[in-house]
Length: 107
Image (tube, rainbow, N blue to C red):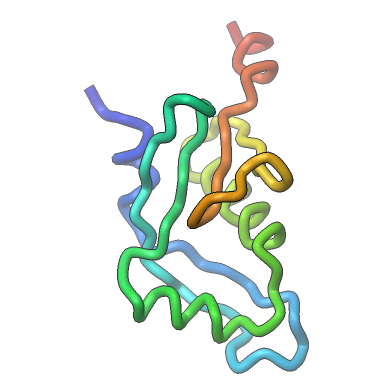
């Protein structure tokens, strides 16, 4: 059986800068994808310090903006709707969760 985290960790993820004065307009960091079962969340953590540097070179792009981009990328990759956990997750990395209402409607 293929796990959702395995599907999401197959490629480097394109991130766009929302800061006009950033060093890079976009970056392709590699993320470690970890399930967080207490919160029913999927956490994206930069795999190496090089990947963290790529994210930092996006300038003043906020954690919220990056989380939204990761949710959109996961939706394209899996065809399942995700929601970014913006105000509820305060840990390391970026958290998204599967939209349970969307799945219930599909069933």
